[in-house]
Length: 178
Image (cartoon, helix red, strand yellow):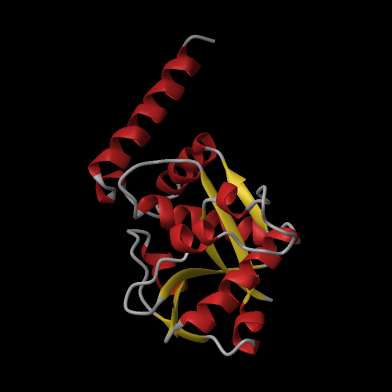
């Protein structure tokens, strides 16, 4: 089964005082489902989601300007299609060439369709179709990709490259003192 994954701010989706079970806080939608040109960006990942989610983390982290912890949620592609959400493959913004074609835009979103997407994400979170990657795990995923020649550190944003180089240097220094 193919899933579509997206980075979110998990705390914004969690139950809050004053909200009934199943209600989605507007902050979650306005923070994590901001559209551009009535589209919303997702990344494909196949089962098992844990392995596929690492590729999504790699794509997102290497296209970013800094390394942070990352919360991902994934929804079955079929569930989106069943709700009338149109999908359009598009080249993802990542220096990892092999991952660029794993990017998908949800297109022609209006308020009704966006609400359906938000509901599907909330349901996925309730089913634990999510994972938090610590900053350290994100760095490790990028370092492993560089070691396996999926990309070069020179292709990274200068801020990300510096963080990765510092992590590698720190790890190397630690190995020398054993």
